[in-house]
Image (cartoon, rainbow, N blue to C red; front, side, top):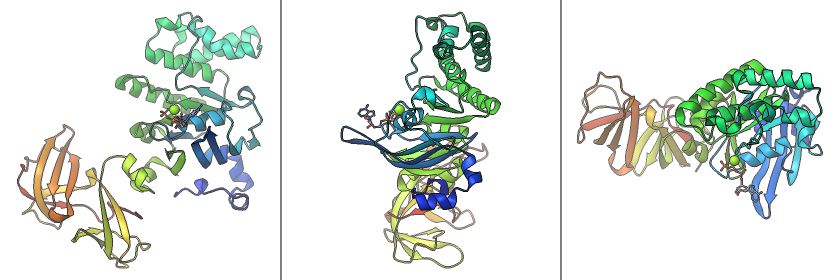
Length: 380
Ligand SMILES: Nc1ncnc2c1ncn2[C@@H]1O[C@H](COP(=O)(O)OP(=O)(O)OP(=O)(O)O)[C@@H](O)[C@H]1O
Ligand SMILES: [Mg+2]
């Protein structure tokens, strides 16, 4: 894990790191939160600070524990171990409605027999707010999700996207400090999904609260978030800004989950103090920057993104490794090429289609190259 805020929690370390000022900026603090369901560990000791005002995403494949973590923050699930602070206060003994959180559920159940406005008003009515306050806040919430004229409609008279917006309004109406969103766009088609992503970002800017957003879609997490926690099998693998996670994956899982990469295993054969080094992959020297931590002889795992590999005709100037183009696929915005590098195996390149280059053609002798910083080296 590269983010200091995600380091394993110890009381002493936290006391050292969390100055009074820093603590004030933290909306949600998870300290060694774990959850076991009848012998299945859904969540290992999760330690994480979510900052105030942040658009924070929990990203990971199905079953990795995203919903469990969100439900624990919202108070719908009690952890097996660990501590949870919201706004600096311990929360585990408080019920959901006693927390300044609100949740949009993964399978957002709206009441089908109530109108849009009645659905949104439900929580306020339960807490016995005056009628005028309820009406005003419902109207504001409808405005925020751009459904001002829909208050009187039945739920079955709405499109999927409109229902999602009602679910959002229902959570927003209570003016939560922390909004918990469990795959709120999961059921939408691509076009509507993109539209709702914009709407959510706009809401986040307008409201200024803390959003904790669950998704299994890496593109969505990258485009929406200030920071992302990538999860796998109940563990937080890495926490960081989208760029850090994409450019510097801290584990093989993150490298494989984010984007498309070529993967190789090899042994460090050259690690000069300056300039590019070399990893030997099945007898073939592979040029790359080798971090000082990897001494000559260390086994390494290499990830090299498709879009970082350039393929040029063999006679073009400049360095690179020589190989044979086995496949060239036109994908519209990009062109994907697979090159056979002999003993080392194959490498895939996926680069922008600039409209100026003629196809190289399968069977052509080519050279592949990348900048020394492009490959990510990880301990296997
Ligand atoms: N009430 C429960 N009883 C038993 N096991 C559970 C329960 N809730 C969740 N689990 C298990 O805990 C693990 C994590 O589940 P969780 O719902 O948090 O995953 P998720 O990341 O939200 O997945 P998805 O993307 O499919 O929604 C899974 O293995 C799941 O089967
Ligand atoms: Mg889930």
